[in-house]
Image (cartoon, rainbow, N blue to C red):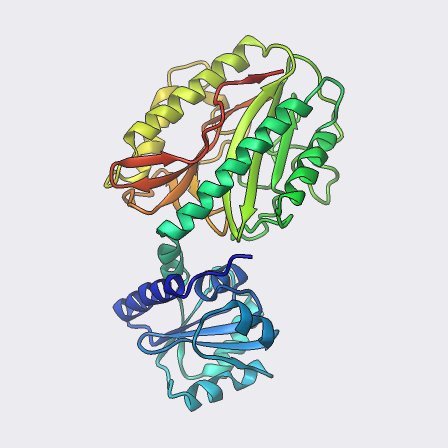
Length: 392
C-alpha cells in the first residue's frame, strides 16, 4: 500500500497557502473526499484547516486512528462535533477570521449554512478554483503513478481484444474486464466532481447503442435501466459494428482515461473513415500542445478539421454535441484544464489531460482517447496502445 510522501503534501499545502495569501483569504476548510486525499493523503470524516500562514490542522471525527496512520500531516486531532470547529481553531491560535474559504462548487447548501452559522461574522468565500488550480499541476510522483496505470491499460485493452466475439453482450464483456481489473486492485469506483455526473469506469458501447445520456460526454449509451440511464446494456454485439471501450484504471487514487474501438469483422466505410479522421485530429492536437499554447486553440483547430467534411454533425456527439474535446485527469475525471472554446489557460508543464476526438452515428461510435502529461518539450503520451480500429 502506497502512502503519499510528506514532501508531496508539504509542497501541495504550500502552493495552496500562496494562493490564499494572494486572494486575501485567512484560511481554508476542506471537507470533500478528493481534496482531502490530495492534501492529507487520507480520506476520513474530517475537516482540514489550512491557514494562509502557519501549520495546517486535520480535525477528524471518524476514524482518528486511520488518519494518523495514513497521513503525515503534523497536527491531527479528534473532533467530536463540527460545532466546536471555531472554538478549537481559536485554541490553536487561529482566528478570528474575516474571510474563510470552502469548496463551494461541491459543498451542499445545507452544510454551507451550518458553517456560516459556526464562523459568523466571517465571510464564507469560494476557494474551489484555487484548489483546482493547485491540483491541475502534477508532480513527478503523481506522473509516475499514471505511468504505472498506463501499463495496466495495455493489459486491459489486450484482454478486450481477446474476449470480444460475435454474440457476446456489452455487459458480459464489461464483466470480464471488471473481473480482471478488480483482481488487479481497481477500487471499483471513480470520482467525478461535477454534480450528478455518475459514471462507471468501464464504458462499453456497441453498434446503435450510442444514444445520448445525461452525462456530459460524446457518447451516452442506453444503460441497464432508466435508474442508471447510460453506458453498457444487454445488447448483443454483432459482426461489422463498432465496439467502443472507454476505460479508466485507478491506482492509489489516480486515473488514466483511454478509449479504443474494436470490431468483429470489418467496419462500414463511414465509420472507418471517421475513425481515421479522429486519429488525424488527435495527432494534430498532439503537435500543437506545447507549453504556452492556449487550451482553446486545440479545440478550435479540431473544429476546423471537420467543418467542411461530411462528418461535421457527428463530431463530439450525435444528435447532441459536447463543447469540449479534452479534460484534465488525476484524482477526479473532470479536473482542469478543459480543452474547449474560450478556455484560454495556457498549456503548462505538469498538466495531465485526456484528449478524445470522437464521432457518433446512429449505427456506431468511433474515435479514441489518450491521456498525456505535459513536459517542457511537449506531450508525453501515456496511452500507447494501438490507435487504429482493432479488428478481431
